[in-house]
Image (cartoon, rainbow, N blue to C red; front, side):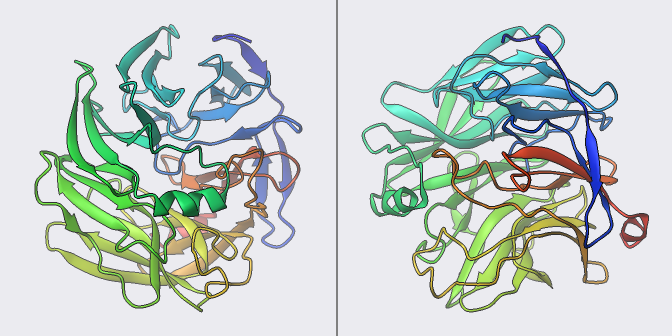
Length: 390
């Protein structure tokens, strides 16, 4: 199958037995499909099309799903797509993604013309999720020295890679020129670089590795490489994960959890005031994403974390729900059960993770899970009563 191929889909729906809310399955049984990373743009601005990844011909490529026509147009071809890090440009004209851990590519959605923007040097490997600034003129990413690199196909390798203190550098790529500059270069495992929305001078990133071993998870640095600083000082027994900027740029949100406790917490760091605030307690959600202004959050309940060293100390009950959280009144709403297994599938640690997020108008939540068979793409409507609590 090649770029431009049209896949005809037949959506199906069922009622979640516990919440009584409807769930719409967008992709077919027996075909592995998943969404991109939760803070990467996947909906077009009108909410009518969705970027996703599918293995319709045994190769995992990007597709653009038309909700009205129930069709999916193939956007990429061949092997090597990083199908978690790709995103749509703010004007809905382009797909940006990394291929073969080396090439930053741009696909024009109308013509499917593809252009190489940047190539990782031979002695480095492109790692993780690369993220654009608000006007999509720059992209930050992480490169790891090739001599230190190991494919992270399971959680044991994830833990051992941390011990290597691999040489990593955070780079900033000018999309128009294709030139990259190094922001920081360290013998520390770095990950998840994210421009602060509407503030290109500030980049967040993390110290990657088992959550109970890293010195501090979230860091900030100026785009010129100066003023590297912690966003949060870990308390004894505290671990932090899955940070993201509120889409309006007002703060860096993240999940905090304590050893021996089932519940977790939403916290926000304000880089202007340097205030680190507790927003509310929540169930044991792994990923967390907000709508534009942080008046709604969506989280995916999970089980005992596998990305810690002390797995016994952090053992908790599995939570199969998607939750909507309303910080205004600190209420927790069960949306539907995702029932995902969170298993590693064929060397992929992420493909069964729900990674939920809201549609542009807040009316739907998109997620992926393997509850029925292979991972698939799902939509569920947000009850009007919850929207009224914003």
